[in-house]
Image 1 (tube, rainbow, N blue to C red):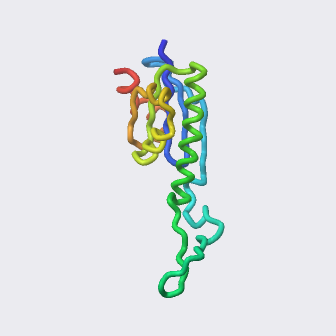
Image 2: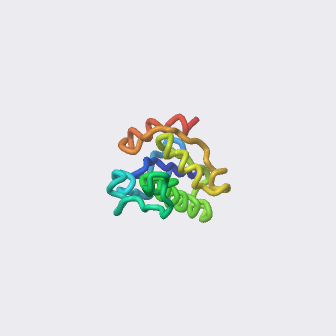
Image 3: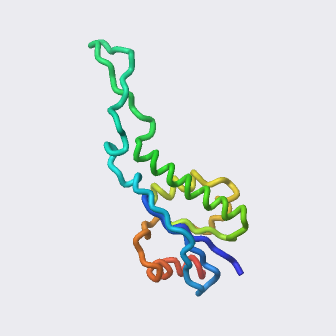
Amino acid sequence: MTSTWILVSNAAEARLFLNAGCGKGLQLIHHWVHPDSRKHEGDLVTDSAGRTQQSDAQGERSAIQWKTSPKEAEMQRFAAELAERLEAGRVAGTFQRLILVAPPHFLGLLRESLDAPTSAMVHASLDKDYSQETVPELANQLAKVLCP
């Protein structure tokens, strides 16, 4: 029997399901909510950008720009948290195949966060946001991937 884990997520919410074989349905293993990914930039930053000591030609100091926006950093943090859980499941031998379902940008963050052995277990990935689908709708959407 092949156990498949299916991670269905977006940047603010994720559900992890187990599929124990073709026609066996989806069993919810874990549900995460990460509300900080939904916040506006201003809500994530408690203070204005810092100032440099160097002055420009007019004597003004420019604001420091972030390399990664606070919102993007929250999405990366959530993707890393999910990847850690997937790695723990792989190490424990809980699943043999992994399916990732997420909107394109967050799917990319998930892939970047996975270690090489866990990434090698990805059987399929769908760049769709099915995070609000009911379990029966989700099972229907994934039928071709789960039972080729």
